[in-house]
Length: 154
Image 1 (cartoon, rainbow, N blue to C red):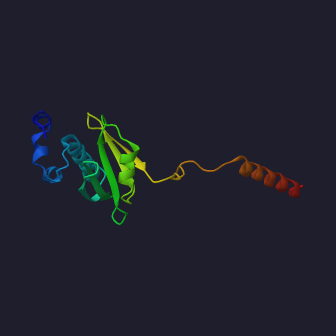
Image 2: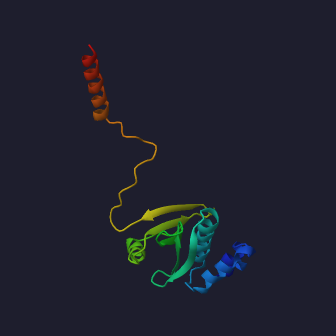
Image 3: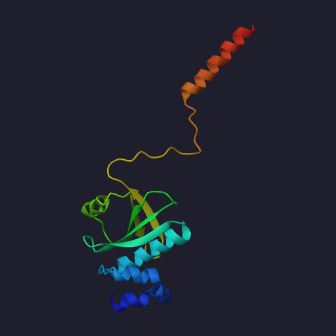
C-alpha cells in the first residue's frame, strides 16, 4: 500500500482485525482491499449478514467476500469495486464462474455503496408486493356476475 493512501485510512480501520486479514490476502491493490473492508462492515454491521469473510481472487488481483444474507441461505459472492474502476465482462464472468450467486458492490469515494445482483443468464424478478392484479378481465367478470345477479332477482 502506498503511503499517501495509507494516510487517508483512519487508524481504527488499519487496526481492525478483519482489515488486517484482508491485507494478508496480498492482492496488491490497497484501494480494493479498503472498499472490501467497507462492504464487509456494511454487510455485517448494518445488514446483519452472517459468516462473511474475505477470499483472494488472484486472477483479478482482488478480494472477494463470501457470506450469507440469512442463516441457512446459500453462500453469495460479493465483488467490491471502487467506483472509479471500470469493469470488463471478462472480470464479471470470472466471478460468476465460481458458481455462487453474485453481488457487485460499487463503493463511491464518499463511502456510499450500491449493490447490484448479477446472474448467469436472465433472472425473472419477483413481483411487486403492493400491486394486486386487477386487470380488465377480472373487472369485467365481476360486472357480468353482478348483471346476472340483478336479472335473477327481477
